[in-house]
Amino acid sequence: MSHATSHAIEMAGVEKRFGATEALSGLDLTVATGAVCGLLGPNGAGKTTAVRVLATLVAPDRGTARVHGHDVVRAAEDVRRAIGLAGQYAALDEGITGRENLRLFGRLHRLGARRSRERADELLERFGLAEAGDRLVRTYSGGMRRRLDLIASLVTSPPVLFLDEPTTGLDPRSRQEIWASVRELAQGGTTVLLTTQYLEEADRLADEIVVVDHGAAIATGPPARLKAAIGSQVSVTLADPGQLAAAAVVLSSKAGGGSAQVDDTERTVTVLTAPGEAVLLPVLVRELDNVGIEAEDVAVRTPSLDDVFLTLTGRGTAAADNEAGAGPETDAETLGRAA
Image (cartoon, one colour):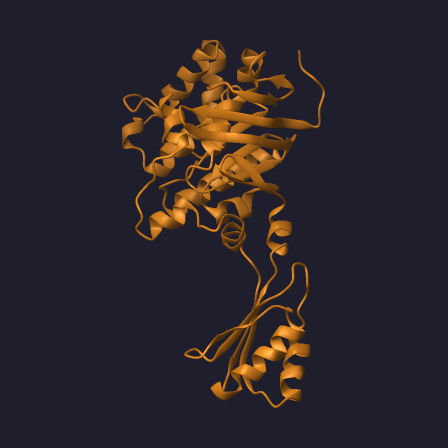
């Protein structure tokens, strides 16, 4: 039986182990109806395991989880009727056309032949794949396949959609196309839970972000609030390196209160402001002038989600690690897919 709630997704104290590996360690999560929530975390943090629990693919060991008012254990069939899921790997038959794939999904969901045909045509047109609809999927680009996989999860018009790293490995143009599709869904009232390792993606799409590490939520809030919570970086470049020490004193007292970092080679002094503290550059420049310090450049860099990530977890995302040349890690989420 469904329970009336303003939250489309709820997890409370969810734990999940795969052998000796603790994938989720008391995860709490709520997503408001009609919102886009970005679930962020390093590789192995538990993001995919959380989605698998919510999608009824694995049962939690402890805790409770509800989707669209239905308990994922006691009302699994109701949950499945309420959700769409696009996983990390496209679940498509490459030997048939895009249109035939969507019709097949419709028939599997018992929409009937006529409604399945209608729904396939509607979705192909809506998401810009109508011209490619009668081509074999094996001829599609990576971005087109991901878009087709996304719209296949929408055949039944689910109120809740899970997107598990939907743009991993895509080129920038294809990623932009997926983002546009997600925005359209959100504007239409669909609740979206998005797991991603691309922080720009979460920043652009999510109303709310949950940062997960070691299977638990360590921070929650809108992107702007999370970024504001770690302060801004103020940097001054000097003409005379001999004034670096004096400039460090000014910045520490007027732009942050913390210790300033001095780079003799670049002739810069940098300080991190207190969370939520605004820095007025004209005032700072005037203070430097008052003590005879000549600044070549004064800049304020607002924090990014990368900064939030590094501050909260002490490490970057797997996406950033892979771009730097690091290989993929074996993690609890891989064990979850194999379970």
